Length: 199
Image (cartoon, rainbow, N blue to C red; front, top):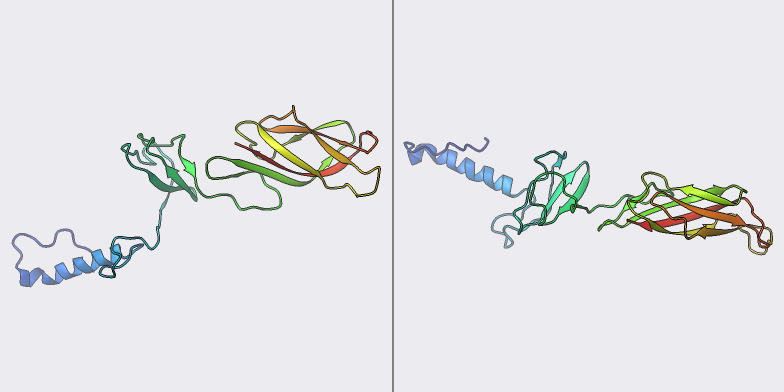
């Protein structure tokens, strides 16, 4: 039997409502035991696990905090930390995504806790035409970044194989420029791997 919020009534006799009261206690105990240590086990009130229903952003969600609270919430499969500065309901600029994207061979971007963002790719082809502009996949960065590259086609001991150089003045939020060249300075085609870090 489910919890009955209207039990007991003022005119109920205890002998009549005893079963309803016991049912209500059992229902409350069942609900409390979800995510919590059971009553009378020594750690009452503490959590074993936390289930968060996945919500959708709206004008009233996430909820507002009163200035001396912090919050956690789930939205679209992601877990967010809500700081005490979020004193109005709805999306807040200071909310921080706590889970990170799964790392794969190449990525359109993985945002770390605190907002640090990483983008990487393997086997990017550089044509033999001098300076080559690389566009980050996905949305890139909100601000500029720093990028490290490595040749994916250089062979040790072969003079004509390519080397990769980054134009350090070319960084933008969505692109950077590189040049592939031979040991004697001639432009060449090549392949590279890169990792970019920004926010």
